[in-house]
Length: 232
Image (cartoon, rainbow, N blue to C red):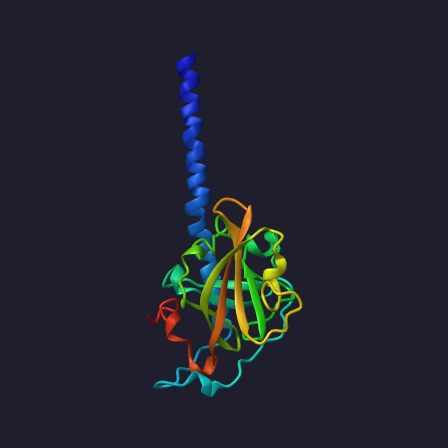
């Protein structure tokens, strides 16, 4: 009897291990692949890019175009982070609802924060584990890493600057000037938020980036994302 019980426990343990492996690894691969496909489908809806021959000074494109605020759950942008993988791209939708956005679409934009290219704080959230784990490698970002946002209007490149860690109540990171109450923004920044540590929501890991440049769709994509588009 003891031997049979032991075998049952071992079998149960193996099944639990296999389930966790499926949930935390294989399922993330499947969901992440679907999210990537949805992002590439979204850019197809925006139409083809037109490459400008030769080197172009980004300053020649003028001030970045700021899109209108999208409807709730509307997919309005794609996020490219080469540090997460040469072909990494995920769609961005309006809202940060767990079931409606983060568990399905992948990356959510905090309502009330600024839009890509707008002066202030373009703040987004995503999971680090499960549901495709779009921000699984957020702690690996290095100073200067490009964080590129694509919309129907064009491409907005930010550069990673620093990581921060705050309690779940630390919503001040979403302010127009992050962590500054009633601050008047003069810079364009991007804020990526996720849970920390891995497999826990005890605190939040925050990645900040600063605006670098923008280019309209007619100028073609920046060099940093060509691999994700199958051109590199």
